[in-house]
Length: 323
Image 1: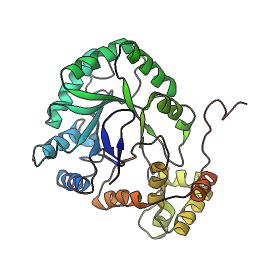
Image 2: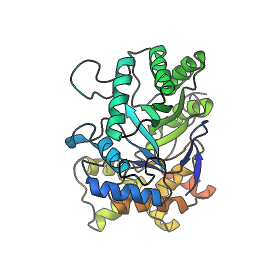
Image 3: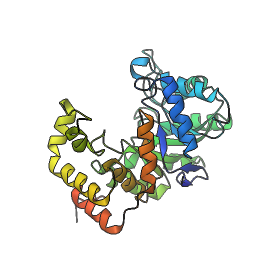
Image 4: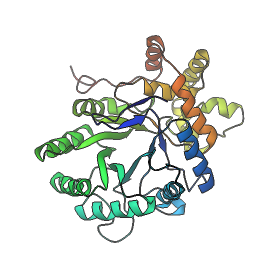
């Protein structure tokens, strides 16, 4: 396993981050435990979750599974760089969501209880809160740091100017501010190349791409359909038909390289200079193994150029759309 620094911080994290959103609703607790143990065995020390994860099992269910896993001991918590998030409503009463100082305090304490730990390594804002001033947000986070409940702050689904706002407000308070940004980023969805990545690079934030396979679109969807391993229907079928020529070219090129399409998609992200660690969210052990396998895929300049031909990217704004 390769390790790198999370943004400009001194925190060392694996080049893959284990996403846990499927734990509970799609993956049983015993299977989730097995996947997390296997992740540690593979050298993955970076785990990501959120307080709202759980879906039909109920919000907080995924954090509870992680907490039960940590409670088994064996150095599980000590070996894990733990990231969770807040923003989404955890109930119907006022102040049970967003980024007010009150909700930051309550949501953090509730997450710590479910996770059965006394601190979170990376506490992330799951979405920008346009109602709450940054002075209030950072004051609440400074208190949490002083209490030893969090070590670093990160963002998720922020625009480039939101990152600039956050870092400017943090700098005025002599506070570290954000060290990471978690965004949707993959060969198909490359919008963050316009402004988010330039902002992250300027302010020293590590990019943590979520949905690295675009919901399976880059995971060999046509090949699996032909082999009867995946049935295309509904929205998935529509998404494929919208991009069929590009996906056909992509899967053919992956075969030419001698790799599985999903491995190539992850390897491409790992070759992007702003990316710290793609977030892989396995439902099964086999999917985790596939993510780890991508670490051994090397793409030369010619291969990277060909992938850009198949899935054109974005230039940095404003050059992408202006002189």
